[in-house]
Image 1 (tube, rainbow, N blue to C red):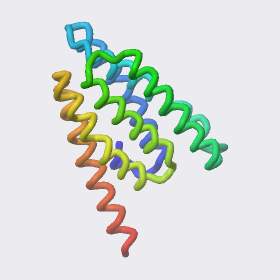
Image 2 (cartoon, one colour; image 1 turned 120 degrees about the vertical axis):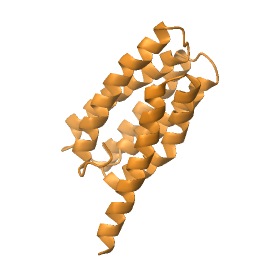
Image 3 (cartoon, helix red, strand yellow; image 1 turned 30 degrees about the vertical axis):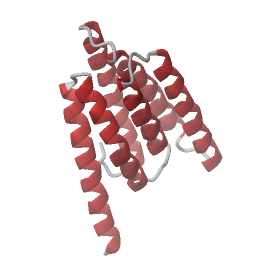
Image 4 (cartoon, rainbow, N blue to C red; image 1 turned 30 degrees about the horizontal axis):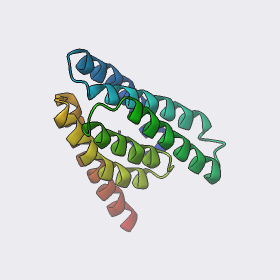
Length: 158
């Protein structure tokens, strides 16, 4: 998603990804990985967040954008605490709060910077919950965000 050029395209791709990861983490939770329930719940919150951000994109003011980031960050923290299984859950809570802040900023390069910060937390969570798909996704997300960020910086310098 971070190779996409517009904020709207990034949000569409992130929404689809979040929905697929809800299913993925529910299956992991069902197979006995208790910490995976946090991943399923928080990806569900993030899918709703992304839809709200898409629906409000045109009329959002900076104040509304900041308010949505705070509201969804609080929801992520509360749902994360309610689904808490062990300290492993904290890694994903941190990652999803950073991800919420990232996707609330309608500037693709700033989104990419926050994703590069959040990806290591999400990757560590994926490794500890034995989510091969999550580990690969977060590694690719980090590299993709970094590549797109560097590419855009180079194009802006010209």
